[in-house]
Image: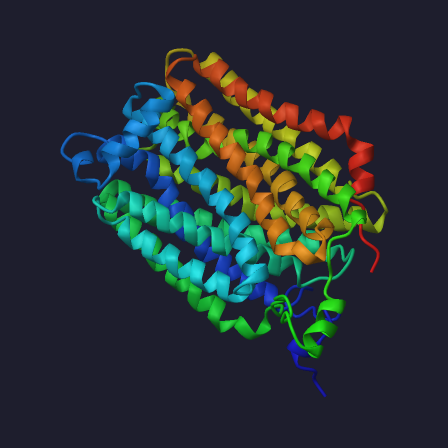
Length: 464
């Protein structure tokens, strides 16, 4: 007699490509959520520099004069490009700060499932409001809050499909982000094309539709996802028994928490290289990249689809490679994979700097950009999902969602740095500007190599 999927133990549930069936729902939800998120983000800088921040438009944005005055109080007078860079940096950074609080809400108040649903609804509202100029700042605020509730809690659910040192967890995050890259690939082709060629607000509206589809998928698989683990009641005999069984932080968790703190610094530095692809790189590509293919000019936003194609194609290749290495006992450790990824990012930005030098005053051929995206996106696969899986495994059970949310602090810090570094785009030569990013990734890799042994001990798998 067949056994229902939701009654299987985590190790026995292999209904989706050798993984629990809940991973399928989470992955496909993430694909459409990333479609909406990156569809909007691919347009954001171009929209601001091409339309929103110019006279006749910026006056209509509620509260923007005060907001800009606050930025210039900190950074001094800013051009539209500098303002757009800082807005993107703040937006992307806050989208990675709020998951800390979203994780606390998921762990302590709503539960992870309801937190994801509420977050998705807020994000859908934000995307649709982006279709209008006046509520621009309100739309960004709703997207930031919704992202905070959704990101940490959905990623925690991926990790909670597995127990202990189950090596499928790392592969699950690769599959999860491969699905995300399907959404990232489609986003510029749909939202980007609509925004650049039809109207900016059509692109933002398409992102809202993608978010609604994402929520529908999540609701369809709601019963196949890991159960919430809210704290037990504070009174009564039953509550006392439950509290006694509830995992709590202990002094033994200290080394793991310290090791995760170091990883936050590593990923933040790496993110300076990764995050610039959506910021100053887009402005540079629009002005300095030869995007002609025959008689067709490739829209700038389509470059984001190139990164997504690399993510989609390389994720199964890497999973197969690491699985084969594991059978021979030769698979690199998680820290080793992350160090390799940092090295790839260094090469990627060195390649971009070389492209500018070799080309001289003319426009850079498209093939150089394709090589850059191949290198930097492959580096991302070695660093970001591996770090996420490592956090999920090493995080104390009592604060798992919170620690997944804290992982996004690395992206918060990195995104703020991206916004700050992006302001130097107009002041430095292109080769020097790109080599700054290579240096950030190189420093991240150096930290891993120097602290290899203590990190390996602190983040070792927990006994189950």
